[in-house]
Length: 145
Image 1 (cartoon, rainbow, N blue to C red):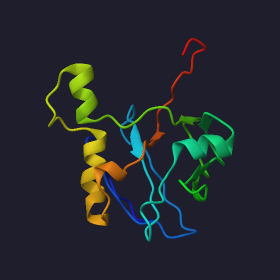
Image 2 (cartoon, one colour):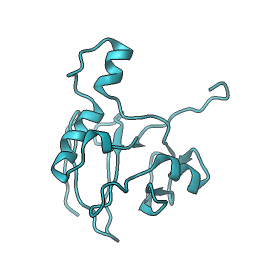
Image 3 (cartoon, rainbow, N blue to C red):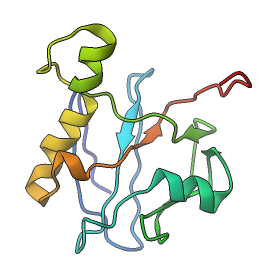
Image 4 (cartoon, helix red, strand yellow):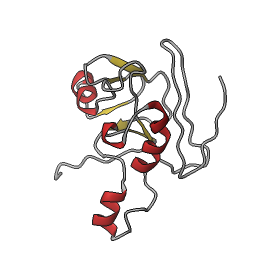
């Protein structure tokens, strides 16, 4: 397995062949990584947080959980997990919400912008990017939400 180090504030896109594995590690700690997936031959079929919640029957998943596509087909399976649980509740941060939430300029670097940049060579535009699988993020779900 090749080792690729992605610096904070950067992204990486790669092709995963059917039946192969990859590992994502948080080297420095306290990072969140947004993972999205697309079918190589048809990028209109992509990771679906809604179908993943529905077909796993859970708001959060962990080891042995499956990430499903917009057509309810399995895309990825979590085979190991040291975080414990992952949610599908938040979209990628973006220049759009930075402006609304924090008053920052629209050219501020964001997860959505990073994803758009690394996926563009694959013909995937920003509007095609689904809400992510939030790796390394544990969100407390409170009863008053």
